[in-house]
Image (cartoon, chains in turn orange, yellow):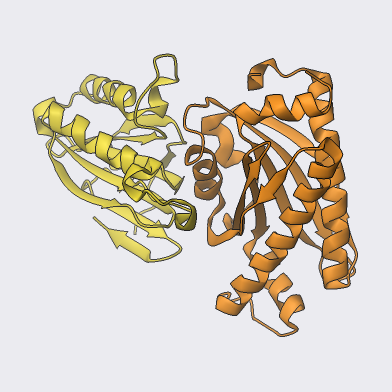
Length: 205
Length: 160
């Protein structure tokens, strides 16, 4: 199955799987943080590869991003992205301390964000795995802080070099009941070769 | 300092200009910005390419092998001479180093190598480079003097 040939019904199916994954991940995060965490209905995004840097429109492009790869019956990547300021606030909540806006996130902070990404991605993938009856095994996440445009495009290129179209399912998590609502984006990027397996598991191929 | 006119070169695009303007591009990860400059007429161009080789049916400016032809044609149309062109290469990073075992074969490294080879074949000298590493870069190419200013969150500002 090629990305450009995906039908509405098949896209809806993939969205539904991501929706279930997102719901479970929100519950897991909510329990971990003891705060309300909501997730919106996911959106499917398909665009030419050179447009991917524009996928997240933000005024300041510094983000903290955690990349998880998954293996098994379907392969691909999960990318969790938080705006720099949101990531700092989340570290403060997790470690119960105060980093000011003008200071950098330290090693301990990155480590705790990595843990958030780990819980987010593994609960997301395990729910999808159960829903589809496919084995999906996540790796440990790798975390970086940099320009979102560089991160997103490189995430595509480094692992699938031939594609001219980029495909992802985007979920947005909202951390509520805080001084300021925080957001985290989660992109599900299945390898194109795995789309067939995912669609077959849902009886859509 | 006088406010300079800045022109954005998006991913998978190329632009040529002069008149002391500044060509800028953002968010270089594994992508590479290739700049060409003709000091005599102070005209230069930038290509922000994504991958080394065009499979044949891809958008030309996404790939260095086909993109550089477009860039050189445009440079010549602006009145520059190929013999006077000098190049700089910026970018080609590995954003998630933990996942990339074979660094030499990473997309960033392949982009850099292909860029160097093509410039070598064309006989265009590479004056300087700021490539590799594990961080993103933004670039400002000043057409008044051919200097390239690189900004990264990791290392701050560097001029080549």
